[in-house]
Length: 122
Image (cartoon, rainbow, N blue to C red):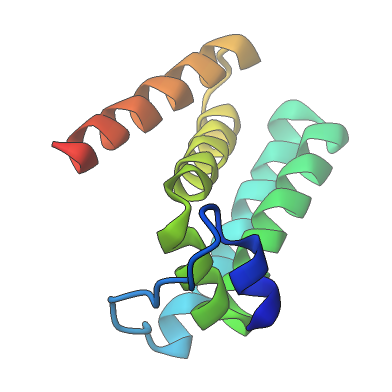
């Protein structure tokens, strides 16, 4: 807990995530979703993109499964982390399910993330 307080952006005590913790089986659904995305990514975009997607999505899934309380509270205090997670996840899905150039997939992911960010602050 001390490390979280020291890492808090303005030096105050971290906020506890106000939402309820989803059941483990719901959080565990990210595992097959990640596996499918990485498998399709390997087929469509190659092994390098699949490894990149696997590392990023795997870290997000491990954070969700093993460290939900810390990850959710840390993310709640830092909205940029949630937006970055959404940006990367949207990029990987767009790259896996389409044959569009990666730059177009990045633009799509950016547009989705900006739209969600605008709606969440309104």
